[in-house]
Image 1 (cartoon, one colour):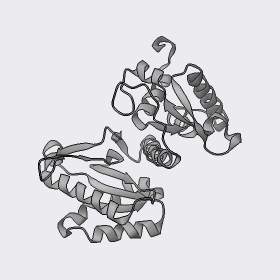
Image 2 (cartoon, rainbow, N blue to C red):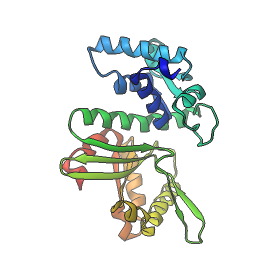
Image 3 (cartoon, rainbow, N blue to C red):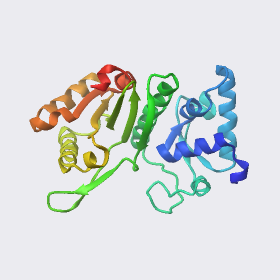
Length: 258
């Protein structure tokens, strides 16, 4: 099977392994960026149809964009066969050959993180930023010892490193879909604070990443900002809140550098 796959085929599989789920449109934007709009759409359809027929990717039951969207309207995951071709573990970190298919709300969240990655890649092509690293779950998770010595796992949605002119920007990203309560948000912020105070990240990388909360609506941004205002004063500067639609502009400008 590996001999049948092109470098572009492998790139698609690696993207699905990195991000777990992607829509057909997102995969096309990542891997079929050359040619006219019509040419890109035709090549993307052929690419995804071929990989589906080879059974290295799985089309999930959900369509995005309506019944006329064609192959681009499906959500795709890496199949067990695709995992074997890449010689990687399954989505839970075990040698279990099963695609990461979850509830519609969770799929929506995973696809929102994937969209951030796609936009960062597009920005890097335009020269606005240099993409140095982007780790999605679970590669971006951090484990450290809690106050009582127990193992605590910090679970960001993504870890990102960007070169913005002469500055390197590092951030943990939380993509908020408006479903978590204020106490839940505060609890996660306190986990970040505990990890910051442990000094582990600073010792390994010389800097602690900014924690960027990305939200869909202004009202939600205000709610999260209020949660941050009630955190310990010395830790509030760790956190920033921005709209999802403003993320790339924020990350690629002087405002993002600060």
